[in-house]
Structure formats: C-alpha cells, structure tokens
Image (tube, rainbow, N blue to C red):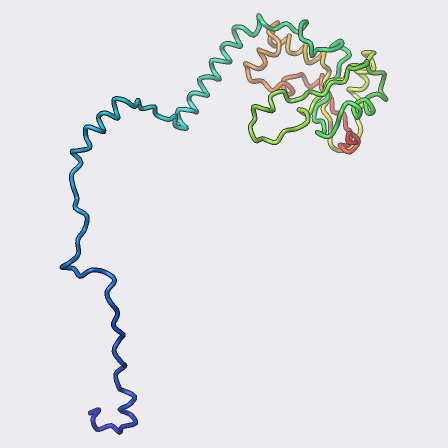
Length: 232
C-alpha cells in the first residue's frame, strides 16, 4: 500500500540511517577469561598459627557494661554502708566552718551569683561572720566529659554572727518571683540524726532519700528574691 503513496509522503516513512559502528568495550563471550577460583585449604595452617599466637580479647558490649557499672555501684554502696559510719568525722572536715545553729543553707542560686552578692543580700538581716559565705564548687567537673561546666553547684552556706539573725532571715517571705530555698543547717542535721542516728549523711545517701524533701516541712521556708538581684 505504501508504494501507492506519493513521493512527498514516502519521504516521511523513510528509515533512519544505521548506527555508527564502535569497537566493543568487552571481549567476546568465547574469548572471555576470568580469574581461576582455588580452594582455601592452603590457608588453614596459617589460620591455626594465628589462633595460637594471637589471643582473642572480646570487646565489652553495652549490656555487659551496664551490668558491670550496676554491680560496681552496688559494691560501692555496700562498702560505704560498712566503712562510712566509722570514717565519718565532721569535726576534722576542713570545709566545715562556723556553728550549725548560725548557718543558713541557700539553694536554687543563680549560677552568676558569687559571695559578694550573697553578702549584699543577706547582710541586711544581720552581721555575717568573716569568710563564712561559702558557695559550693563542683570538684568532679573533670569526670563529666563534655558536659557543660558550671561555676558552682547552685547552693551556699551563710554563717551569721547571731543565731536570731539567721532564724529571722529564714522565715522572711515576700511575693517576689524566683524563690530561693533556705534551710536551717541545725534543723537539717537534727533531722538526719533523728532519722538515721549517728551515721549522718552517709545513711541518707544509702537510702536514696532526697535531702530537701526529707526535712520536716516545719523546718523549711521559702525566701523569695528575684534572680536579677543576685547578679552583678
């Protein structure tokens, strides 16, 4: 039927020119050769010699590490329960300063606050003993790896010259935001003694009791100070 079409239409059905010939990039199937495959029997003596000379040391999995740390923690707590009460001697602690009945524990401190800020805020309630404001530093910061280090641990001790100034300071309240938690140090130590006997804070640590929650509510009070007042 196409031979009866006019020449103008036949030109539209003309085949395209053949593809350009290029040399093949691979060898012909009949000429193709691959690397011969041999057995592994010749390597068995070398493997046996390697097992004899090099001892295998398996790595610790995360499950084994978790169990090991848990066991070490339990052993440390058992050791602390046995040796802690005998080694606990607060009278020889160089960090203890002043009388407990004149000492105020200040918690929830702003991390930018320092001793001068505490002296300015609490000095208006009564004279403070010289070098008796101590902000607790983090002595184990190097053991926390890449965790962000803080200038202190967020609480401090303030020792007044008179016990009545400390007691009046602890029970002052106002309606300002951002509370600071003030605890009477004498009440804290009395509560520990009544609850745990002569073992002191070690027994409190072993029983995993939250120190602040364990103190009687009648011995706690909230002292409200805006956080910006404890900044430079």
